[in-house]
Length: 300
Image (tube, rainbow, N blue to C red; front, side):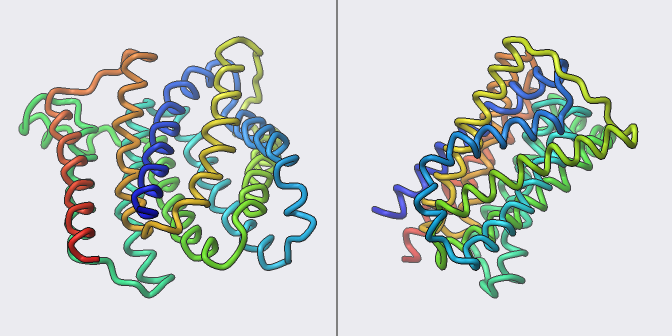
């Protein structure tokens, strides 16, 4: 029962995260990506501080170091994602971010010395094919083959780097949450990401890599509030609390549903449409999730 509770909690996270792509894409018209990142996570850390203050006073150095490691991968992952999202579509960003599912079993084998089960490998393969098809703009197999990789841009590359960094974060969450208290690690992770966003925004501005812009309006405020409270603070607490009951590979498969939610939100908020052929990708992703669930139950 605990396992299913954890899986449902992580699926809830994918819904929250799926809504961020369209909101952030809209907001980037009026706020620069790295400044947005700094505001989003700094506000999340400040809101969360009263709830974790007592725990922080009793926290040991090892827990803080673990939180800093998670914070590094969280910050660099979100920085790459934010910069990439500014250069590609919300739907495509959601799809490429979802490819982190293929890196998790590899990193789990390297870091934790744990081999994925055969059904996990099959599930990851189905999810990967589903993600690739889902990102196709064509309506048939011929269009898909013709367009495969033809419009891969800098934003897509940054998002792919983000996927690798997020895979590291998922695996290390599994490692650290079994050893240390999760609440202080959540706060450190949020704080490092927020401060890192401000620092990188300043560095990029003085080096002319990014023009800092901030136009306060309802779009920016909505995006900051939603991402700070729900997608940063609440989602990070849920991940660190419940992911330890689920294997990293299984967590990655669950998180791979996020691009579907991202596409749904992008359709309603940005009018970005999924191709008919892309719907086949959605089906494959769901099949991958079902395969992982069915065989993991039999394997227990």
